Structure formats: C-alpha cells, structure tokens
Image (cartoon, rainbow, N blue to C red; front, side, top):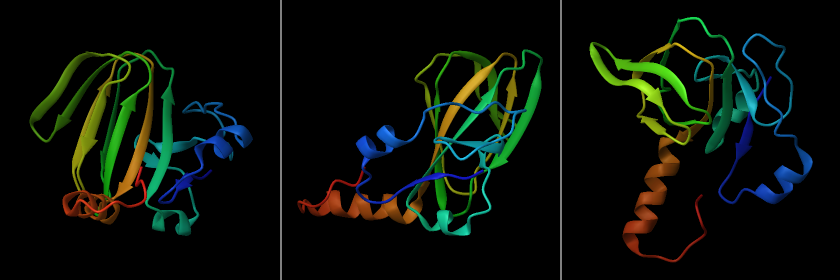
Length: 156
C-alpha cells in the first residue's frame, strides 16, 4: 500500500517505463504498483508519512460492484483533491444537503474539492477514478509564479 509521489518536475517517462499501470480492485489486496489503491474512496492507502510531504500524491479507486453503495470523504486540510473519472459511471455527488451531480458521469469528467471539503457519493454502477491529492502550498506557489510572469520550471 502506498502512493506514487511527484515533486516539481516528475520524470513521467521513467515512471511509466518502470512501473505497471495495473489497477487495484476495491476488495483485492493492494500492492506497490503505480497508481496505488485507496483504502476507502478518495483516501490513499499508505502508512508512509513522508509521502504526505510531497506536492502531488496519486491514488486510484476501482470498484466493480453493481449494487448501490455510499461513500464519504473529507479532503485533507492542506490539499485539493482532483478526481478524474476513467470510465463512465452512474453516481450522485453531494456536499451536505446540496447535490453537485446526479446522473451518468462520462469518462474524463473532472471534479475538484478544496481543502477540508466533505463529499458524499452514491455509486450505482462500477467505477474507476484516479485522484490527485495536490498540496495547497504547491498550487499557491504555482499561482504566484504565473502571476509574476517569471519564467521558471514547469510546475506540473
């Protein structure tokens, strides 16, 4: 169980060459291949505290069940969570009493949750999501660099 952690300039080519993109199912044993599985929806499965110091952590949630099921999560206080649907799925997203989405979410759909934001989901079909847990400091620094117009290293 763990994360793939990326710093300012990740070497994606090297990562892809050396790590499998094999997926992990929700009810199966999680291994150390990238992207790493989640212990629960939007909650990376890791005991490695040093990974939480990284700018970007990547995890994946795959659930092949076809029955209705509910999941809840709260974004960490220092991170934004960017979710990407990797396959079309029928679901309902809610934040408190407010429904954010209810229907068939197409593959490629993004959802961004800010720090400390609760989110509830009802899934009605199999799903596959990749989650990017991005440090708020990283996003703030990227915004300041862009606003200053300074040339610099690519941040993402």
